[in-house]
Length: 541
Ligand SMILES: Cc1cc2nc3c(=O)[nH]c(=O)nc-3n(C[C@H](O)[C@H](O)[C@H](O)COP(=O)(O)OP(=O)(O)OC[C@H]3O[C@@H](n4cnc5c(N)ncnc54)[C@H](O)[C@@H]3O)c2cc1C
Ligand SMILES: *[C@@H]1O[C@H](CO)[C@@H](O)[C@H](O)[C@H]1NC(C)=O
Ligand SMILES: *[C@@H]1O[C@H](CO)[C@@H](O)[C@H](O)[C@H]1NC(C)=O
Ligand SMILES: *[C@@H]1O[C@H](CO)[C@@H](O)[C@H](O)[C@H]1NC(C)=O
Ligand SMILES: *[C@@H]1O[C@H](CO)[C@@H](O)[C@H](O)[C@H]1NC(C)=O
Image (cartoon, rainbow, N blue to C red; front, side, top):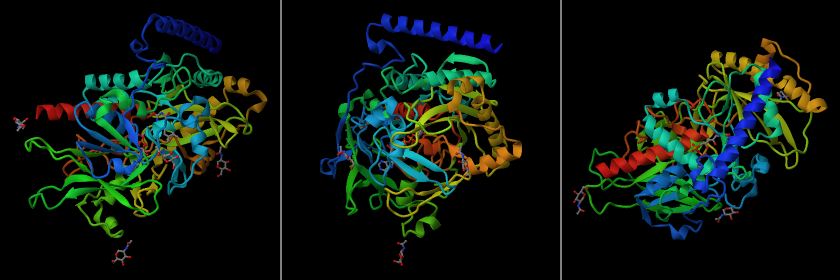
């Protein structure tokens, strides 16, 4: 039975490879291949880190944070409007640890406080976590696994099916590739998942379907990473200016000009040079519409689930009591800012007996099981500058536990305080035990044992109570944390901040629930989708 299954997969994969080779050679121009961007030349917008080139200027849109959501949004808005993207980090181009698949994971072991492309943070739960600090955001440091969200998720969000599909395709044509072959380790993981009963095998698909599948990746067949920054050229790059190495410290508002009783309206943004300790701040403004019957420009926060709530609070939008302890004058007492922080609890087993020098490996194969509630993946990840470990891991897709985010101080470069309360709800703990058992199942599979041979770690099957203990001690993360500016509490369904004019938030912080699958695809799609809605809305008004 097992043999038969494996033979079937091998044959499937062989056919898939032949077909994709035929397909690739048949398509004369690289742009006709929807899933392969190799050789595609990316046009970049103007980028500078010289604050004097931007200071005092004005733009139709100011996008704070050039990450998964911010870049496609900026590109889309640039088709009609002038756009400034302010990014606290450097450009990703020219960083081999970002761009090369065989250097995957190295940014995470080379962090420092203010300048490294990955920023480390430890939640108050004690779990080590990371976020991108570079143009492209966390897509520049992540594992590159690409998948669309399920139809059920799109329905829940109330999104237009056809527009969602088009937005996904726009993103995919620019940054997503299909795996041409599986790495030796990913083939072993594929066999291990099937052996552990994560069925059916769905072959290669970008859709979020139950069972075991191969998915897309932002690494192309030459092993080069395509970050969200590559999407910036997808509109009219001449309308975009990217200011690098500049950290936004707050959004400021029109007070005097607005009639009493009117909502405060965003006027511009204050920022500092990211490496400047003098805290000298600079200002940039929203363009005034010459035609007063047209809406004013907007500031859009796309700084990710940690920074977006942090910047709102620093701007005086948040729970008033908390803001007052930092002497921040309150503009809007929006109590839900920083609420509903979530991270998907994860369990990972190291299946090699000891750290070793190997080429890192990114996930290509995934197991989606337990009625979509559990996601299994595996990577070979650096643990130091020259050693790696082999990890098989699972995450809970929809945790019930939620946490909170608060300011630690007023420095926008520092991490806020965040607590996810992993496994605090009983049902999450029940699932964690289940995940531990599933990960054990894959780890102890014949495929994994045969492949690792003597390098395999000694694993003992744990009982339920022991599994619980393991969960308590060893809960970790897939880095899919979200929340803090959720839809319905902080922003409305068009991502406008409640009670404020000209200010939206659009990124992982707005998710009330994780998209189930790895979130990057959904967040890049969201930037495109909402960008189009803004452009359409303005041309019809
Ligand atoms: C290690 C790791 C592995 C992951 N693996 C995967 C994976 O394989 N597949 C997947 O789908 N997802 C993965 N993810 C998750 C995914 O990358 C994130 O969910 C996604 O990038 C979040 O998008 P975002 O737009 O909310 O924020 P981000 O992409 O993080 O973008 C936020 C941007 O804002 C900038 N910024 C923040 N504060 C400021 C400020 N004050 N001023 C100016 N700029 C600011 C940041 O530097 C950053 O560029 C991973 C994440 C990590 C960290
Ligand atoms: C941004 O800052 C980093 C770290 O200080 C530096 O290495 C890099 O050259 C800067 N980038 C630009 C475009 O100035
Ligand atoms: C201002 O915009 C409105 C609505 O688009 C348009 O009808 C009007 O002609 C514009 N006026 C000027 C002076 O451009
Ligand atoms: C807030 O202001 C008060 C009075 O000016 C001062 O005593 C206090 O130290 C300030 N607190 C912070 C956190 O800056
Ligand atoms: C799990 O946690 C324990 C206790 O903190 C630690 O000793 C052990 O190394 C951890 N195991 C893994 C696989 O991380």
